[in-house]
Image 1 (spheres, one colour):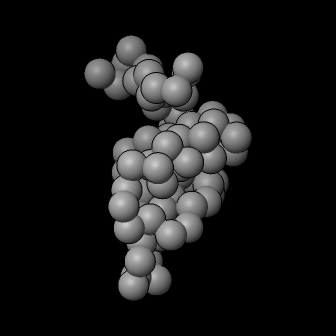
Image 2 (cartoon, helix red, strand yellow):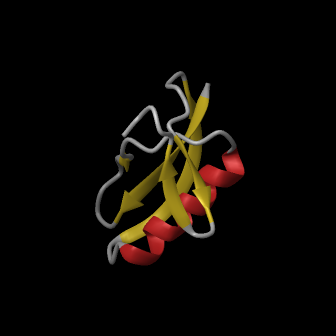
Length: 70
């Protein structure tokens, strides 16, 4: 089980995510906050659990893929 960061953008009720899958909710929220800062239309963020495998880690403000993913 993993956590995925999600972003909701202006004028859209849908939540969007990418391939990032984190080990903890805190890690997913840190990545989501980074996305929110870079996306001009982001209006809300969250982290949700999913059944996907963890594929990397948020380290020192950067996403680091697991070696077996890249």
